Amino acid sequence: MGVMDMGGSNTVGYNLLNFMVNQENVFSSVPSVYSVVKINSNMGGNMALTNWALILGAVLLGTAAQLLLKAGTNAVGHFAFTSENLLPVTWQLATQPHILGGVFAYGLSMVLWIMALSRVEVSLAYPMVSIGYVLTALAAWHLLGEHVSLMRLLGIGVIMLGVFIVARS
Image 1 (tube, rainbow, N blue to C red):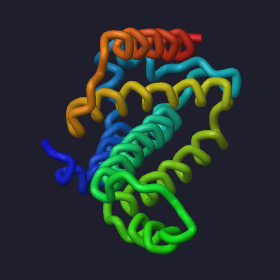
Image 2 (tube, rainbow, N blue to C red):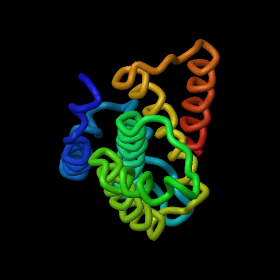
Image 3 (tube, rainbow, N blue to C red):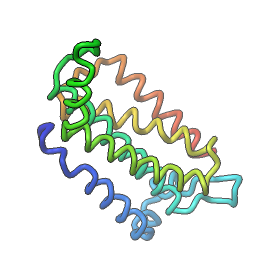
Image 4 (tube, helix red, strand yellow):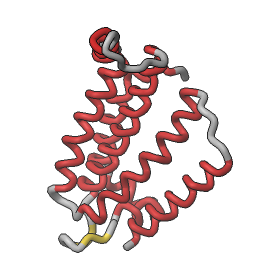
């Protein structure tokens, strides 16, 4: 799958969010996934599946936004803002389809994130953003051909361990 195939990322995120919200029984039949979904919260016991879906949806859309922005800057190429090229470069960036898609994905991600924060403590929700670091690194490797070194993979492992610990607290 190439960079140009990413046009449906917003649809994929929406479909995943819709699936998660409407398929609670799927998670209850898989203990390891269900234990992560039943995150304990001081705001009323176990975090509802809807709240988990809002957080995951925001993270997935944030990941899609990063990949779209990178695809857009790859299409534009290396640039620098100078007094001579400020307007042309700004226009080129503002009209680049991948960049526009990335900005839209970020906007939608922000809406889901605000909804999640209205229901879940930020000290619980914010560490889940780290999942986006992992997804972005792996997707950049797969979709954009970026190099992911052993040290990065180890860092990703540490991040995932931290997210697991926070999710279990």
